[in-house]
Figure 1: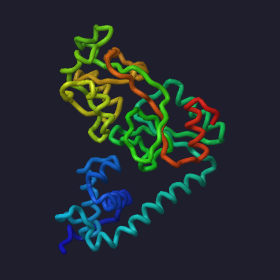
Figure 2: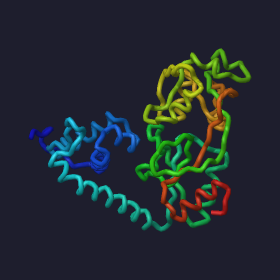
Figure 3: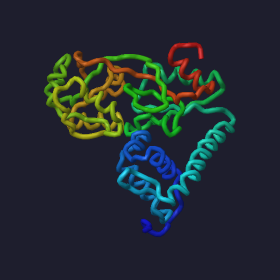
Figure 4: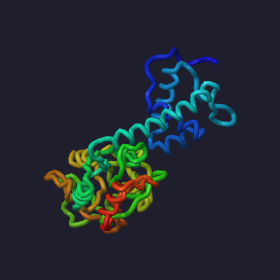
Length: 297
């Protein structure tokens, strides 16, 4: 059997995690969906692993994707290494002088939510760290354990993740200050139908479609550019590249003189939620969710 190339360099844990996901799913497509990465990126990482090991791990046959003998030999070890690292990371975090709640978000949330979360963690002698996660990660950092809880805009398509709605708000549209519709008190979706839009990355999946208002359109949106962050999206809007939908509260949080935000009354509202990994019943996580939901932690 031919090999991709001679071995080169150390193997990355991420590559092993990707390999395990592909082997378990027997499909690059399904594995990419579970990992919240694009299929080309996943294929590239698996090929990089094969290159570093100097062996072929997967073969495409008439019945689909299958492990080679080398892949079969690697799988149990790779699985154990991925699981061991997750356990090590959790143990290291617990060993600190005080526990830390890692909070993920993809846009500013304001609305007094971050303060409530900080107070809940401090009451339990813990600290809090906020991590900005790219729109490309549809799980907002929950899937790979980067965060403990996350502020997410629904719909959230992520396995083994639970969410609780915190608030509902109207959807508005952000326009360049000199846009012809900027003088209007409100804008209808019909008036926006032919406008170029700033979109979330394709990896955002259903959330990308929600913020393009795809369900309210008779034809697909015209996407001018994609943005990985809310700040990048607003910058594109200010430059006149396109328009973008956003929550009413975020229209105030992201206010700037070269951008005008107007309500779009014929769109269904958006929902902001707190999300956490299913089965994570640690006291700090439970307290955080309770504090945000207005309960006694």
